[in-house]
Image (cartoon, rainbow over all chains, first blue to last red; front, side, top):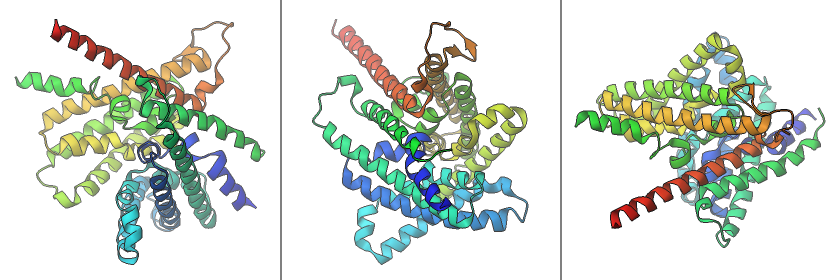
Length: 192
Length: 209
């Protein structure tokens, strides 16, 4: 039950993009085509789940016993960078077609603050191992959802008549604001 | 001449390349911590500090770091600086540190810092790198302060926790919610576009006359 709550909370109610503002760079940068948005979302979800699964044991079995949790930022960012590199190498070898589809997006994930944010939130909220994995996956799902919705709106937007100064980033941000308002409606899903 | 170019490196961060509005970098903190003016400025100063020392260290080491591993090296340098900042803030300003929460460690992945390292510090000597970091950092702080002032004024009717608007003012709750951050940011980007297009038009008119 708790796992389901964590999933719904991370994917919808506390959507990383729309309530914590994490992962805004790819959200604005890669959301102009639905196809790209889906690929980026899937790659990020994969890395996030993996990050949760790797950073949790490292934090609780290496950093805490050696009494060096203050090194967590350095440790986490190195783990994430290494993970992304390994995932890239593995996909390149295992599935060249997927690699071509994701290609440029993979390295970008290292600097996606949602991934580091995920590891930090996981430690702050003291999730267990299984909870962390669910949390990582749900966060990825929420990120993908926001990306795909935004890209759908932006594809329609190309035909809209927007005032000149609002074109580009500005209108995208205002739409994101409206999406954030809409997502607030999910807050009623869970009480307390 | 040297003084002029130093001043240029400093000045470009304040308007021409003002980070959140022109380069659209560092968007996460711009949106997340600007629900009050104080938080915005604290975040801006923390980023300024990290940016300044990251630029100094990276530009001092630029001849010794191998090209292939430079990004990893930069990230480790930045992560260490952020750890220092985080501990300093937690010790000296506990309330602010609490309010900013996970967004201080997230300075590590603030694209502005890695962006300046890659675009400027690794190619330039230490002194211009300091000017660059100060300019961009102050531009970033000013942007966050502007966002914070607007949102705090409309959301609470106060600035720097001083009540400015009287009892008649009905606070716009939406401004302190996430949605308000996006709306204010979008509006400010449009405003910056508008001012600079007016400037360009004026420059063109002056050139033709």
